[in-house]
Image 1 (tube, rainbow over the protein chains, first blue to last red):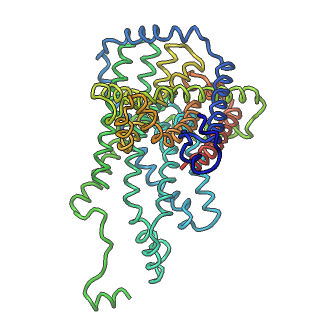
Image 2: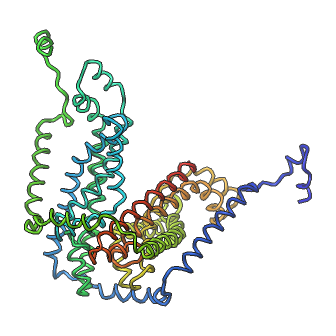
Image 3: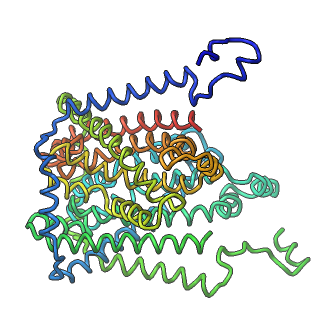
Length: 274
Length: 269
């Protein structure tokens, strides 16, 4: 310790102590920690939490799971049908979203967009699609078209557009210029440049992104029914409202099964495509 | 021009198909179209109700414009609650996901612990946050508490998974160095593992805060607090102008938080 007081000369270098952080680092870390702690204290002290409910939670959860056991197989037929409906909603919506996203991606990418106006139009479509959650889209479409699968399909299409368009747009911006210059040099039209120069280059990304989105949409479509937009969520909501906890358990297990199968299928397809 | 090229070589160029085998290509195209047709015809569309959609949409849009900010207090309170839910659940989720991530890293944990850790991650990831929220609303009642618990589970599912993947990629030399110098498990984790995963951890934390803020808007739809509850009430009472105001604010908040978190993460890496 005494040795560290020596400030200069070779001894200072030899005898200095190793420490993980410099003084500046230490203060930054201290400041950030204090900030986080402050945010936590502010949140917890002003949020409207009824603490006894939290202490009671483990008991309530135990009670809930006890009522769910054993899962009941009574409504398996309805569950199977709505499960298939859920898959169909997700798949059809992904199918249409993929086609609709292509033109949006083309006008949202800087190198293929015709002009400034279309660029911003494309970006506006992408941002507004991604900022509104599927459930909120579903609420809107249920208000417009009434409860049912159409509202669910539209909600998923509108939500997927932004995701697909953004990733495809980024892929389009990264393409190799050479094939396009070659096409331009032989006098190809704009449309032909797209078909022969741009699309083939983004094809692999196109499939990979579509598969990824299908996987996500499968999860999302399991909850559409909670706001009345079709799929297994409708019977889940019904079972919860009637306190049929054993049926709820079956439905939840069915959803887990569906999600796991979906993930496996997506992984298999991805390996095939790439 | 095309014809001259053809007469000269007797050969005209065609774009090679994406799938080379024509039988497979057509089978796939026909299969996909048949599926879409079958799925569309099997789904129960209520065409009568859908036909009313266009006039109804007009009515909704007429009702929604201009967005009404007259109940700004309600809007502000809803957002504050969402932000608080996001802060608390992110911190809680991060605190819990670090040990779970260590448990589910194949290179650090013994086999039994690895299975438990991976199991926890799979359970946390398999349900949509809205379904988890329903369960918690039943268990702890309506309000932000259910939202906090839901988003904690949601955060664990994502952060623990990504962090475990990062831990499995660490450079093993540093672990060996600390071990050979006689460091115990805790010291090894603290000086050989954590410094290597710290940048990823900070990036994930900021991403998760952003993500929880988005999700807190939707868990409210099943009664778990935050701006989503306000939005659902507005929809339920046909206050479309207020609903539009809320939606616009949600979009605004998400854009701002995305910009901030994007900037921080860019500076980190």
